[in-house]
Image (cartoon, rainbow, N blue to C red; front, side):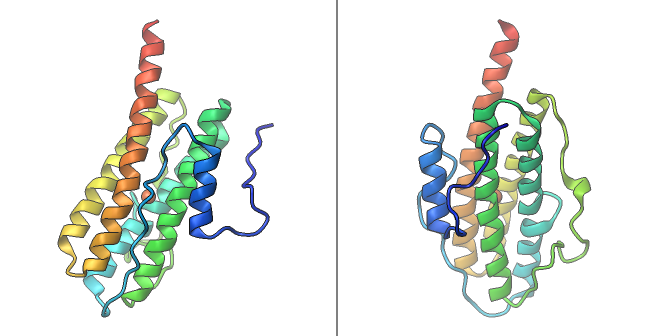
Length: 190
Ligand SMILES: [Fe+2]
């Protein structure tokens, strides 16, 4: 049975989460170390709409969390499984911060994109390792595109800073999955 415990007995703060993620996985960089900006500003329905899609839209953070936890539970390789769990935890901090931002701008944080409730059908359940990695690469690329697009479209500079900061974590996740895919494809050639 794999050991999947989070080390702390009490819920960790965001900083402790990050330190914990770092210490348990020194060889893999799963998040940037720069601080996350706090969102402030007047109520802004247009920005809330974009944030809701990043939060619980088809390609949003809730989908990323559940996809990586599904994969974490499905693979036998302990190192890879643990990396998926740690990435899911980083995605959870993104969900948390987007929720705070949505509240700050006058929105509500039920798990929907503002039009449709989140669905378990959004998760890519591919299981062969190569297909799993390709799905994750598509997901991280889509997330980076959406964050860059939404950062360019909002007039709130604190939202822009937060979205670009989150995107820098997603770039590290993309790099990790691309490296893993390259290793798998090299194995196939052996
Ligand atoms: Fe994320």
